[in-house]
Every structure is written in C-alpha cells, then in structure tokens.
Length: 106
Image 1 (cartoon, rainbow, N blue to C red):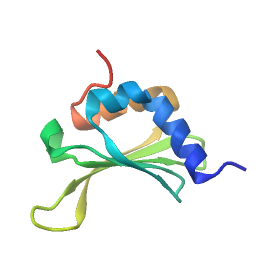
Image 2 (cartoon, helix red, strand yellow):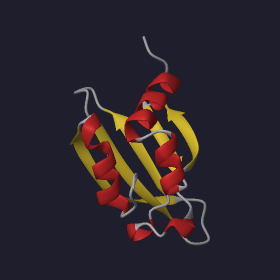
Image 3 (spheres, rainbow, N blue to C red):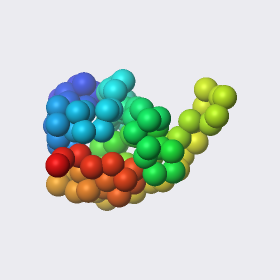
Image 4 (cartoon, helix red, strand yellow):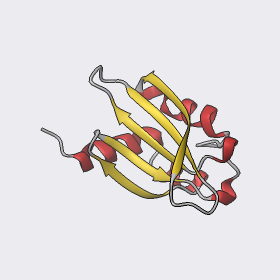
C-alpha cells in the first residue's frame, strides 16, 4: 500500500515536477490524507480568481479532483473558488492552467 507522501510525489511528477515548481512558483507542498497533494501559489503569480491554494485529490475511480481556493483578505481561512472532477493524469497540467491561468511549461 502506498503512503500519502508517495501519492503526493506521484501527483507532483504528473504536474511536471521541478519544471512545474519553477514555472508556477508553487510552494508548501503537503501530502494530504484524502489522499492527494496540496500546495500554495504566490499571490504575485497573478492566478485567475486570485487562486492561492490547490488540492489535487485521488478519487476511488483512479481519477483526480482538482480544487482551487483563494485566501480571504485579512483572514486565515480559504474559500473554494473552483472544482473539477474526473481528471486523468495526462489532463492535470491542462486543468491547472485552465483553473489558474498559469502555464506549467514553455
């Protein structure tokens, strides 16, 4: 059985790994118990709808759900901005770009 961190590393690799990190400025990667990967985007990245946090969750159907959040001004809380489900691994980069407006490669 795979650990949460193993699944999170696989998801990061499917997003593009170090290339993804460099292109987007993503940081604070966390393996979550759903299982999946959560990470933050810098405010300066200028993402659509002021998205500053994303979660990529592995669904029982072996597809992903991608959930985007933005931080409420002056608060510690985040509010959900968008959600897409039924995403296959080869669709993750395109879904990320669609939800944030940020490109993952040149």
